[in-house]
Image (cartoon, rainbow over the protein chains, first blue to last red):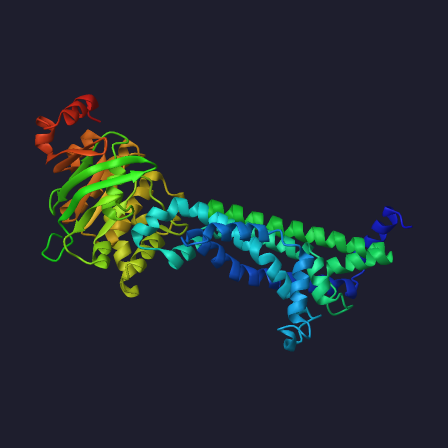
Length: 234
Length: 242
């Protein structure tokens, strides 16, 4: 049994050795999660804003559903996407299962409700302040929603970050649709899970460090951007 | 400008508005004609703001009707703008805030910048055209709101207590812009509870008391001999004028 100290030493050695396997895993993780978050942002912001300013039947039920979907279990999302993409599934012909694009799809499904729900809340708060002015100027519906998204863009960074945090940290969905294939679909979280069960704690731990450091850096950068923007734009 | 093709006069027919189980506006009928600057006067909570929002179309009356001079909806919308007590500015430059309004009003792209700069000069804030609108002072933001309205060249301008949050210096500047609007032929409909301001800017008064129209009289008559007991009490109670 390794002690924590040994694992730590091993992790630090590995981090500074310029190991290409490690680099590849980190790069794939970032590529998959950033792609998924980009897609989910593109879809989720307009969706959230539309629900925020729209007045239609079933709106309240939709909001409750969207909020509930924020807590989607990754393994369930993985399973559903697996069924869609598997040979016998409706999208089986695309041959995407066990490829990075499949992982992007699964994470997009997972992150979309988070970004949409948080965006819905922010836009709705802003709408209370802007509604009369925008309606007076003649902006309604889609135009009003897009104006609000752009106007509170710095607050929406938080929603996108929440999505990114979720995507980078989840293991259940990517391991099912990606298959954790060495050099092909192996990402940080799946590697940590595998190496821990194999007993290679230094590799697992060093990936854990990188993961946490990345998340902190991304959040710090976003925070600084938001602060600077607030000073500039009010 | 008052013309045969304009949207004025505005007729309010037995206007009533309920909200939260309470009647805010009780059967107001009035006619707002082109020309005189109309002051909607009344105490806080009298229903001035709600009445303006009904006229501007931001609220739907519970019963009664609002008839703009037989014009279709898009023409009526374009013919009016409103300046609120607290202006809402978008997170972009002062100039871009006006450009945004012009774009919504379908002003051709090539003309927007010229019109917007002219409006900023008109209210005396051309020098801050490129500053972010949200970091401007309250007075500057309100002047920007007036510039935004100016750029749209409305036939009717609604102003909902436009100086309620401003200091005396800023108030004077805003009043000067409103006078310029009036002089240019724009119909002014402004709510206030400030008698001095009503006198400085108004030609006629609609006095609102507890959601009812107590009287509609020329400004001088209103101050000399108000027709309603409520107005008399209000004029007396508000002295000295500020």
